[in-house]
Image 1 (cartoon, rainbow, N blue to C red):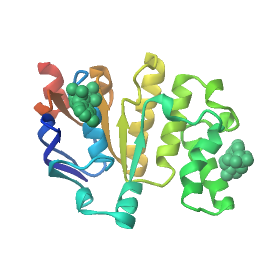
Image 2 (image 1 turned 180 degrees about the horizontal axis):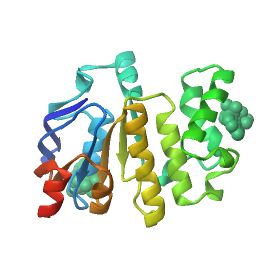
Image 3 (image 1 turned 135 degrees about the vertical axis):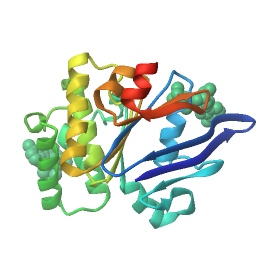
Image 4 (image 1 turned 180 degrees about the vertical axis):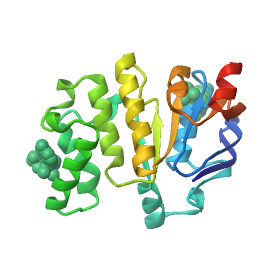
Length: 228
Ligand code: ADP
Ligand code: ADP
């Protein structure tokens, strides 16, 4: 479970997030939607512990991320897989090497890396593109590889930060189906950050609307989407 409470983030005198409260129960998908500048990326960085809140807290499985450091923080961060916009694959590495990266970084033994990379590529239906470079893949395929890499360390929580932006509708649908499958098959808890309302309709159990650093509305998708 992800529990965000009273989360405030300021840079100098600029308050970017102002008292955010949001909970994502285990095995659910919540979405944060909002226009550009609303504070979505900042929220994402607080959830994967790239930033510390100015006040308030982000708790993942009962652990307050801001209270952790060193090895404990690294371990907690492994629990949180992140999928970014497609640009984040390393261009000089193949699809398989990109997926293998977090495992190698962890010092996982090579036969185990091989096995896990195969499983991950299969899960995202990309085994047939294992040896392609990012430039040889479509945007949707790159995103699948990004998801496989985000899952490499078997996180229980997945943060999807604009993972479908720039994709065509068909690739978007495929990625959303994949995220839904991860929730259903593996019980992964997913926080989707997006500026696309269609994405929210397609996937989320719960939605929060962010505007100027505040949640202006949240609830079940059927309620919130109907009103907006
Ligand atoms: P979104 O992802 O919704 O577009 P961001 O979280 O990127 O929003 O940014 C929200 C606001 O916070 C913007 O006005 C942005 O200029 C400001 N902001 C983001 N990061 C910083 C920073 N490091 N220093 C100062 N202002 C920032
Ligand atoms: P490297 O030369 O860095 O080992 P590879 O592309 O051969 O690069 O492999 C990267 C990782 O992905 C390795 O652990 C490899 O075993 C695994 N891998 C590569 N291709 C496949 C594939 N088709 N199926 C499963 N795993 C693969």
